[in-house]
Length: 605
Image (tube, rainbow, N blue to C red):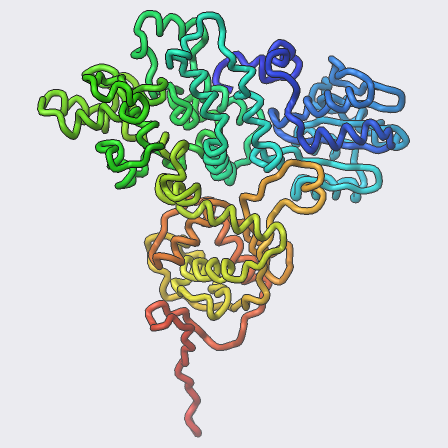
């Protein structure tokens, strides 16, 4: 992902890594195709999706279940009697060959065939074959909803698979962090607290750390669903970075505990720490993780713990490297800057040498030497002069992952340390909506926020207010330009609105999904749906809570304009009177405007 050498990312070159990493991650989709292969039931299954979604791994699982092996070539191959696979339709030499092969498969429905193809190639091949409307409809439905089936044909959009799903997330993390992978090599300095790689892997085996990371990945994937390859690449970078066993041994041999510091920690590398900016931009997931603002969002209590940990809990003092907690046997002796260190994750680099978070806080707060205090403050807010990562940013990141309970739990830690204060509420609401729970209260709050964004009218009592299109399109919803006056086109009462999740039906049966978005549906019409992801949900909730302008992404505001434009087009005006949403009245109200009525005088010419 992050270098020119991506050989390990492709299935055909993965054998050497597989011997170390072990069995593949067991996904719902691999189970689905394996059961289908063992049944030998006739039909066609087409897997479409971007590179890195795991299509080839699924094809290999299919071949093994059928009693064969994954073919080396991309064309149609019989792997067992009556069972065929096309490993990669795009690997065929030209469009004519792809169309000919697809036509052959579609015309022989008595056998069993698995096809893997990228979306663009598959669309073109369907067009070249000129499939019937029913088959074309299955493709469109699958691309839109995740999976669709009809008359022996099943198409699955693997792009909808989310690695953060309940049954998949721990498998993904175990794949690269499980203890047997990190048992240590000959001469490993980890026993002396010197190996950042083993320290990172150890922390990523913790349940609380995994849950915090899952929240961040869910937040980032609200904008673009990450591929499995992308998630694994970021995890690999977080654990290893640019280090190797030989590098770590040499560093510890030459510099001892000072060799590696928190800049090598998983908590900063997960956000792209150590990568060049142009390299990090290759990953949409990494861009989303950075947008969370983790490390840049300050919290008075958390920052106070760094400067003076005496009032913090034992768990916080432990991750700060406080020797009174980590090494009580040394408490009566003169303590050096690294006296309480347990691993590279609690060490920082300053102009005064390497020390723990705790020692830095002590130096800044109590030292009488102005030079030492100045050097400590520089490291705290500017960095060490080499990597230029401020220590306070590293501290906030580590507290978020490893001390969430001290902040009030996972949702509270998100509200306090990342830019998206309401992400926990969105995940809870999506989970509730997925099982048909009561969402009336949450729906009312969403209506309140939407009404304010588009009309300045911050009340749900009149239902969803649909503004006149001219008023809406003359401004950006959520911009700093006040939404007044706003002419009312129509209203949708709360009984005609419902919340649901996008992934439902067949896609839940065949793919590992995770509900991180919701849909607002008007009168049960699939054409009148507003999809609400983390960024839009944040804008709506902020509008409802603060009744002030909110600056959010252009894409989200365009989605709002499109949604209200469709409503105005398809819904009839509530009545023929002229009404204006008046946000200045108490309480906010819809005001009917009476215009002067002129009549001609009798006898006038």
